[in-house]
Image (tube, rainbow, N blue to C red; front, side, top):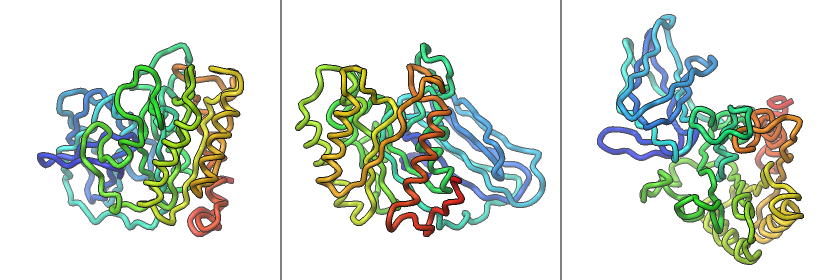
Length: 328
């Protein structure tokens, strides 16, 4: 699930939320993993996932003592590429592997920044800095939207990333130069025809306008429009949604920042045939996560409201994929 690179008989995952599903018959399964200080969630048969942190050494995760019969195992990368890669080098079971479960679920493709990554969402102390242990894409607004709607998800997200410029100190090019990559830090193109989404969702701009002096408005608009034209060319006929995130505010870093960015996104959407959605701003009553990022409560609120919005999009929802009972 998600973009990856194949090298030397291994699968290398960089983007958050990536991983794989396995169906097997037996009472145990072992996975050989490595990946710096990345974290992964592993679950069997829909049970609550167990979290594993990986170090730079090879690590074998063993799930045993399962009831005899057929099982579905899901493994997902919780953390983003700056934390490290997830490298999968082997799978073993005491029984046998079976054909993968049939598809047919909706597919959502997200492009975003730290908010989409779930940066620090597990840490309830906003004065704390980032720790890999407190990041969880699965609990981010994007990950939870996919869960609420029963959708497959590909997320290309990097903390501090922007459209025309990144947050100060974040190295590398903005996301429009990396959106086609199989791995955010490798010059390997992903086969975009191998997985066709039912909707493309972009939540960027918070970092472009996170500090002063602000970019000239036309620089941001032109960079965004040029990128969306690339997306439109490849994802022809697929609904495109531009979202503004919960950290935008009208009192920081300059009066009217949120109003400014929303207005620019409205302008960009009107010129590119995209639709617009504004996530509810972070509510101090619900607390903040590390570095004053959205809390788990805020992510869940944003996921529920966005799932409802997606379900109502003409040609996408209307019960064809997303029954309204999924988020009621």
